Length: 418
Image: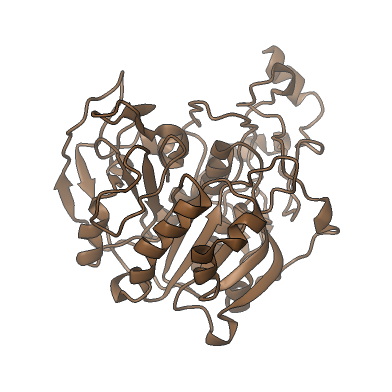
């Protein structure tokens, strides 16, 4: 997924050097594979500590047809309040070309837990931007895609080498951070970082040009920028030409969103847009006021390709309505959307406050929502611990700081003392 001091976006067109070369940038894309093209990994940067790199770079390609789209691209921008993003002329340019999601919410603050949540269906109490290492027994969207032979990939500017697992790296000339792992969820998850084949899919952004030219692009794209102005400039320079490029846009759904809002005292509602040639013409320039959050990214992909689920908060998240119309998923409404804040993290295994610690949550292996069951490997691994799961069923509303996950009586205390 991401990187950067706050994972910064490239404000230039594909192939150009970033105007913001004092900051880092990364893009995450997940793709559909049939054949694999491998390249030698070039390492032109100083490595840090015990960082690991991939032995090769891989760009697997295939076309697994979905019910609504065949490629899903997500672009994440820097924390910005809804109204501020709405007023930006370049952001508005894209809003007029797609569907504006007026009730899309970030899940908490700061940035890192939102990225983690969109990759594995929970943020595990993270309330910081630390080097949190998610255990290898936590399944992710990568597992769901790979089960159906839908591969994934990541493109990140200033990534020193393919599959780099270091916490950060400094731009050689300025000695400023060009890449920071805390916004790279695939590498934050040990199931990717400890797997050579998966690390080979986490590439420098310069590989995007080559994969685009050779029609080897993947399906889930994610990034970050310094401000809404730079974000708008980057989108206009980089994304606008791609909307007319058949190698990129054919049967593609693009989500532009922000990781979090800027003012922590306000609702964590973030300006979001759906684009792509799969948007019906009569919906271009319209608004969708249904309730969504970052888990909707996972649930939408699950519904589109009829994937399994992770047994976490992906299960009950609303699918984007234009996709739900094709998959049969019903869009549910919260009781009172004005009550949703999502401004602080609930407790968990990575929460930095001692009093808010909680054990690693067990997935709900019995979850079965809209005909989608939990990934078989998750059921095998966690089935005998089902009674300890804080996830129950398919709730639309997920836990918050004020309404944290509920663990079985005694389980949380026993784990803490043990």
